[in-house]
Length: 59
Image (cartoon, rainbow, N blue to C red; front, top):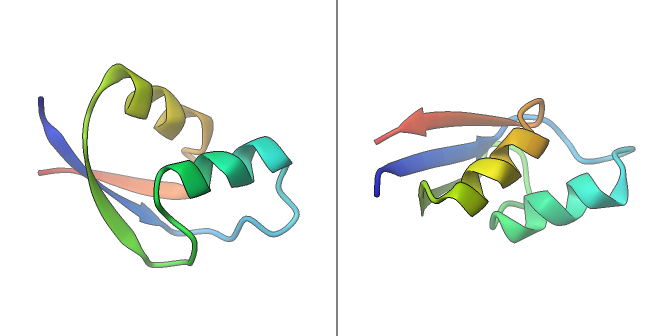
């Protein structure tokens, strides 16, 4: 599987609880923090739900 770097670029303040939970499940918590994940269908779906809050780069 391909790896991606996911960086949180916007705050979760005022966002629905589902989006906050998705950010937490991705391993993010603060702006400008990054994590590397394998691009599985599950991770791709999570990214799709919060595209406006994160930035994704292929590795």
